[in-house]
Each structure stands twice: as structure tokens, then as C-alpha cells.
Length: 359
Ligand code: NAI
Ligand code: MG
Image (cartoon, rainbow, N blue to C red; front, side, top):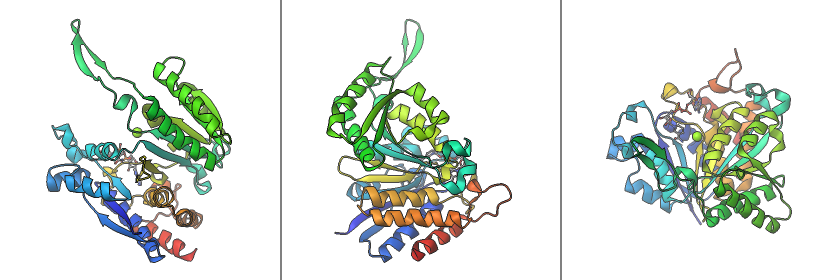
């Protein structure tokens, strides 16, 4: 059956990096992968063309796709828009919400070739391979009621941190299954000493544990988890946590691996449909210069093959091609050591394709 892939380049460096990732998809197609690839507008590009960051036609095509590859959205050009519902970032949030993409997978994987770029000493991060599973459509970012209002003569701001048992259970299952396919260790991060919602979180994780007897479940308070991530990050295999804690911890973990230009992500819904994107943004400071690192986006294609298309062998092949170009010393500016020669976005794409074909 032909699978449908929707590519949404977005803004800033988005079109440059997705162009290279699309070439990798085409190379997979040439190797017999049965897919149909189309492109649509999202973010500022869609706002400029159609007056909305998430046009109905884009959303309809995303719904019909097996997987979506997104570049990045946003930029100073749109930051002054008064109607915040028109901001490019709303296009991304709208897609996550409309597609029900509750399961966010953010690997923090250190490429040994880039160990020098880590914020930690090489011996602390050598071999680092963590998978952070973040709940993406619930928690305090979405809880109601919320707002800023006047109470007793002064303004107060408030948000609601809420998770239902069902929401906790479905992200818990994603994490247990991930751990069972990896190194069988799952650390659930909460603040169960203070917050009732995370007491329930912990209870649900404990209830699920007997169904995954091969996985060793542990719990950690989020403040300690932040400390442990920078003290001894290799103790972690899979980490599962809510939306806000996951947002913060996954950014911290990202820095352990060196460059944001290397980090892919996946966001999955209950039916295995997914959106794949680099962790970084639209990098307006370097947009249009053919210098951005396309590897995070190319690695996002590998995640797409693995998690939405069931093509693990092709995914591994892309990852091996990326490892090969790093071994060969190719570096875009963000991952180059001082004085090291750098290649352009398109040259990096050329090299990955050549390595992919040679494997
Ligand atoms: P950013 O991730 O775009 O850039 C941060 C720094 O990293 C910049 O110096 C940039 O040049 C560099 N960088 C990022 N990706 C790179 C790559 N592939 N290769 C080489 N260098 C790279 O974050 P920033 O500057 O905070 O946000 C810029 C815009 O992107 C904003 O409008 C923001 O809202 C948006 N954004 C969008 C996201 C998305 O589409 N998922 C995520 C984060 C931010
Ligand atoms: Mg963030």
C-alpha cells in the first residue's frame, strides 16, 4: 500500500533543510519504498500566502497523510502580528492538537565524532543515548481554567496542571514499550512530593509496570532529574514525563549532545500517525545562506521510517549514512571545531546521499 508523506517546509531555514531531507526520501523511494510525497504551506509561509498559519487544505492533507515532515516555523517578520492566532507557531501547535500527537519522542544521542561539542566532559557523555518521552497535548500548557484576572485589587495569573488517568496511561504505554525495545530501564519523572496530579501519574505508572515485566521502572522528582542529567546522564535509558517537565528536561538533555542541529524528534498519535521535525527552530539568523545543518531533519526522516512506516532497516541505513559523513569529517558550521573546514547545507545533503547509496 502506498503511504502518504506530507512535507511542510515552513519558514526560515525550513525550506533549505527539508529540501535535503526530501532528497533522502526520494532515495528511499528509488530503493523501493512505496510512498507518495507532497508538499504544503504552514507557518509564516502559509500566513503570507493564505492569511492563516494552518490553512484548512494543509490540515486536511496532514490528516490524510501517514506521516508529516516539518521543517520549522516562525521568525521576526511575524512576531509583530497583533492577532496571536495568526502567528506561525500557532500552525505547529494546531497540527499537534488537531492530529492528537500526544507522544513526543526526543532522543538525546551523542555522536562520538562530536563528543568535543558537548557541554560536559567527554567521559561523562561518551556513549550517551537517552530517549525522553514527553506528553505533548495535556498538562499545564493546556489545562483549564487559565488566565490573568483581578482578585482583591491585584492581578493574578493562573494555570491548571491536570492529567486524566487515561492520558497518563497512554503516554505510559508508549514509554514502557520504548523501554522494552531498548535497554529495559524506564525512569518516570514527577513531583509527587508536592503535586497531586503527579501523585496520580506515579500511581498509574506503578499500575502499568506488571504488564511490562522486562522493564525496570524507577521514579525521580524533577528537580533531582535535572541535577542527575548534568551529573551522570548515562544512568538514564528512557525517561517519561509530562508536558512541562519534558519541555525543560529535553532541552537540557539536548545540550549534552552538542548541537541542536543534530537532534530529530517524533510526535505520535494513538493510530501511529506521526509528525517528525528537528528540535531546532527556523534560525532566522542564518536563513537563506545555505549554511544550516540539515542532519536533524534527515534524522527525523529516519524516525519517520521507524515509527510510522515500519521500515527500521531503511531508518538504520540513513543513520549509518549520517555516521559515515561525520566519520569522513564533514561539518556544517554549527558542529565544526575551531579552524575545521565547513560544508554547506546542500553539500552535507550530497554527502549523506552518497553515503546512503554506498551502504
Ligand atoms: P532556533 O533553534 O531557530 O535557533 C537557535 C540558534 O541555533 C540560532 O543561533 C540558530 O542559528 C542555531 N540553529 C538552529 N538550527 C540550526 C541548524 N539546523 N543548523 C545550524 N544552526 C542552527 O531558535 P530561536 O532563535 O529561539 O527561534 C527562532 C524562531 O524559530 C522563532 O520564531 C521561534 O519561535 C521559532 N521556533 C520554531 C520551532 C519549531 O518550528 N519547531 C522551535 C523553536 C523555535
Ligand atoms: Mg522547548
